[in-house]
Image (cartoon, rainbow, N blue to C red; front, side):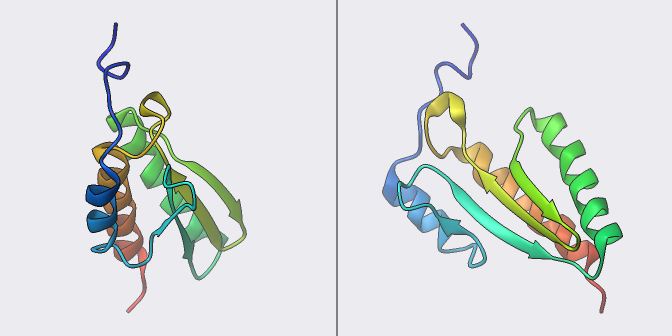
Length: 106
């Protein structure tokens, strides 16, 4: 049995309080995932963002659900093994936010 099979979702109150510190992220109506839309200046920047997040996600063994059209990336995070939100979702959301910020033009 892997450690993922033992993973439990965060208490909804803890998830809500963490989400309060991440104003661009939205909690799904069912409380099982968080999502955010990123908008970049062009496709190259959006794809560069996705590439950097993909490398971080692979290293963390936690992968986003996402959709890209031109300069927009819609990202959804949930931990399927836990059937809900875990620390891993919030950690990857913070990494994605930092990468997006680093790509923003002054």
